[in-house]
Length: 461
Length: 101
Image (cartoon, rainbow over the protein chains, first blue to last red):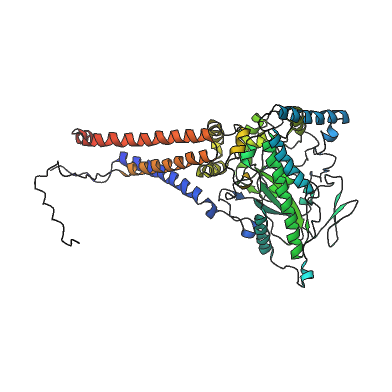
């Protein structure tokens, strides 16, 4: 009888150890991704629990030089005016506006998918309804105040108030809500002059008010409530067409509805809600969203959120209800943008930056100095809308690798990888291309798609 | 209702008739092999879910590629298992593995 061998051979040991490592890696990664939400850290008020790979940090992932930053004049310096505002002559602005209308008419006359009468009519429906809705700095002021009901105004800890407000705003339709505390630095993110030309001033008054000359924010109203509203990725992936523009218009409408509701809710609690008196007014949305921990500044020079990618619009209002501030986040998004550049490559107007790292120097006066960004050439962008399209664009939103519908576990796995394994960023970008993401969807098929409410995925946040 | 016990099966003869009985062989496998199957299974589940979700997300190309990888991985696993089972039945298997160390 032969001698029986004891133990295992070195070869078997190495094989087993290697496979234990691989299996533990795969099973661990799968388990940690699946358990992401449970293991995550809550935002202020404890309402949301974000996956563990969305880390809260003390300073944003793109730099800010608070000493250099100044409050922005949103009336003179931005490009929201007709044509190119002060960045072109009156004659040139008129030419561009005429071209915009001509492009719309030509495409509609040719029955071009995404520009037909039904597309334009739906866009106009959202836009005109939004324009008919009340919008003001102080809100509708219809809800009864506590004293009218014989009650004291609401008292709660900042933590409780934040949780209460965030839950209320989720009910109203907000996707995510974050809080920024106003101080000497963050007050620079509130416009010096609002988009309608009215100065915004801080003053030692008890309540905010508006007169013919100015909008006044009391110093004691120290909290900015920043919220995102989800856009429909299904529509946006038809960009640049009226279909994609519909989701922009519709989201602004919902954002305004949430603003009115929140202002009335705060009034009912005995506090003030000072909102956007004009579309995108009051303050710099991306900057406030970054400070509120809703996302990171990206190559689009817009905010990309961990939950919805760039498929959001950002809104804000200021309140004196004591709240708990959130912190900026690091989910690897800005770092991923350094190597990705997919939006810049796809931009037909070549308006987005190809620089690997963000810079401190704005391209033009429409960008506010004092922070790092991939500053875009907004003139080129807007000129393209008018000269070529006859609609807004949105291609950069649609092609972004973060603009996924997020119904698959695989997307969580990739986002976790982006946040934790930066050396895989280029592979992920290449895989995104190989799997066919970012290719424009047929606009006409939107009208036969089985759409969820508002065209959005409401359970992924 | 018939409460009678069913007829006792015949005791198999000492000399097993292989035409009437199947023989189940449980073989020891190294830990590495079991873990490889675990990784294969997890990958299959993730790929299948991704393929279905991609079609639901209207991302046809991603769905097709994920489905193709799923089928390839599934086929690879099946082929490996079939080849192994054939190898194990080979009369030369034990001779081959004796020198394997």
